[in-house]
Length: 170
Image (cartoon, rainbow, N blue to C red; front, side, top):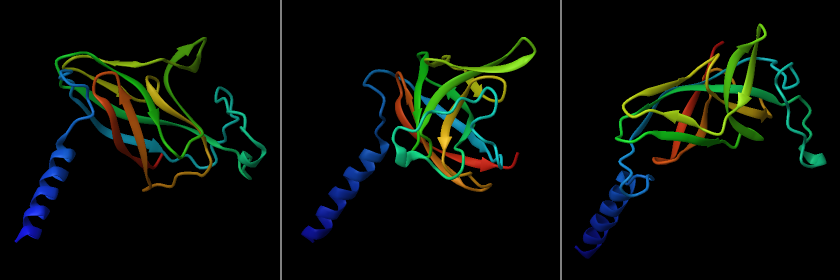
């Protein structure tokens, strides 16, 4: 009987841990991320114009194929009572991850890093081609259609949020 009581307590603690938020107390932030995806682009080399490649940090980092640089798109909705900001993203499949924006300049699409992406109260921001996106630099293997990668987003108020990113057909 004691074993069952211990089991019930452990399960209750696990449940409460799963329900807890990584948001700071009192922040009332509520971020929802949907439709996160990465385009499978066979052969897209990192040394294409406008796509900078990070230098290898040590000789063993050099790969047989050129690393890939690919954008991640998603929709971020803020149902909370305060403006929130996406501050960074991280994944273990890329050497570097940056928040970016893209815009037409002098007849060419140019992208540039940004410090954060503001998510308005009661609103949403679509990270999409020609706008904000998460840029993965130095992917050392080509993601295949149907693969799912892990990405961790860090928000100013909502804290960290792990998400799954689906690899889709171009």
